[in-house]
Length: 317
Image (tube, rainbow, N blue to C red; front, side, top):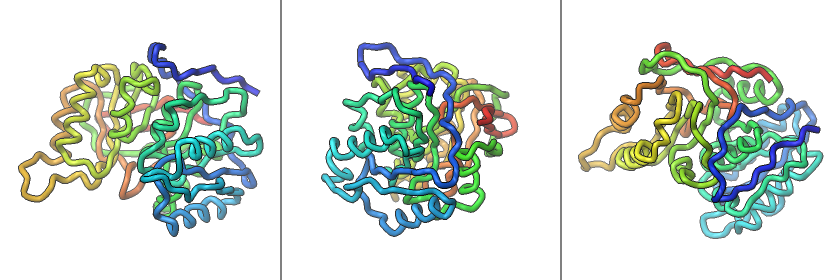
């Protein structure tokens, strides 16, 4: 069994450089997957159980962690309760993958006093949105998670998107995705997907990695254009955007300005804040909230073609 790099989330340590990550061993039918709720309180129960059915129909055993319907304010239980779900799933020798129930907010609180046990066989971690922090923290160990639909969203994905997810976790190469190229040529780098709001609040924390050599893939939901502007301006002023090699832009849904208030559109903000960086940028890619959420492997090598508008993962499992 491979021993993964020891990582301690110490604020005194320099930001670790993102290295190409290794996906866990491919899943096989009959494998056990455990469900956790690391973030917001459960609300979409019908969609949640439909999501479990998607995985079970593929031949996987799916076990729901005890206490997943707990509520502690807007969180799915206290920090300790949610941290215990993550710990139990991570340490379970039979468990091959961890399915996140929903997003919302709260995973960053789990990471405040968290260390991954590196003496276990790596597991798949699958989710997006607020799960961004967990996915980023796993890259510090050299483990690739999956930026992919949550249990509350997977059942409404188009068939090709669901098949793309299973292709990746079962050990097959996935097809490139295409969007609108802004120019800038081609670049190869380490793919780091993120919800923009969550990632912005990770800047300057131990979860943020050195972004040199990274292709940053961003999406968001429910943020007014001025808030998108404010976040991207922070990325610019902090120097974070000067480090990345390319930017892949997914869906920014429900990001319209309030009625009657003068505003740029979110598309204008993205163009203004990202269009002058002198690096390849591709927008309108099919990932994010409120629509098709194509799987993006985290921490693997990828190619971004800013002229043709193509994002392609390089690594074959």
